[in-house]
Length: 272
Image (tube, rainbow, N blue to C red; front, side, top):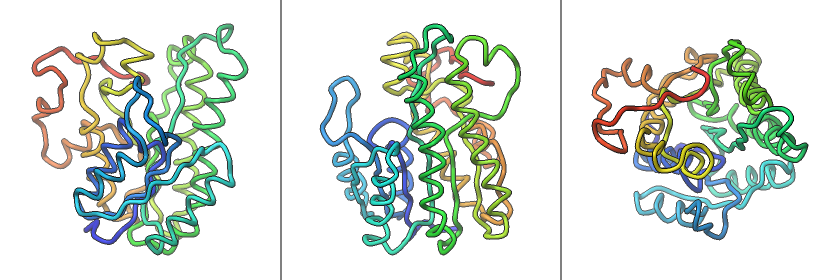
């Protein structure tokens, strides 16, 4: 399935994994809607909707930079309306925007709990809801959530309950939509990394420079997403994908080029 002329709406696409997916799909000819909050660059995070739009256009694809906080439904609907006005519709939705706080219950203040659930759960649900009418008219329509496979091992709940609840809820959104939208042939799946990915979250919140050196680049997620999104939507739905497994199914087994530090020991990601 070609991406030429198709439109991908990607939340949180101003940096990291969202940006990598945007550039991969743009390189394949897709129009990209960069829906994120970052209008001005934060030196600690890097990237804005405008810098990614410029990178997309440099690859010869159409770009639409939309300032959008997915916690607010009016901003979500405005972003969708702008996407339709610019490109005529939406064929792919990537729910990448996410908030993280790996805190135990007593250390999780209400505002942190609310932020994770407003973005990860409510935001993912509401962006999906707003895009469904367009996806229903789209070409090989896909929804892809960046969230982990459901794993009820207590260890994933004991150390960061609020975050785990929010990420598993993102996965349940995909699972529910896969069943609900089956008749419309709209695929809904999730994708999660086998190892940590070198992003601002890893650098600033999780493990600093040491963990960054034990991680893979966001391009491994982008390549896995590409291979999922090109599959026929009618028979590729309701699945919890792991990046390594997706690439292996495509015959790609040498993943050394994705390591931040060639040959370094890799650190496994959460929930696996």
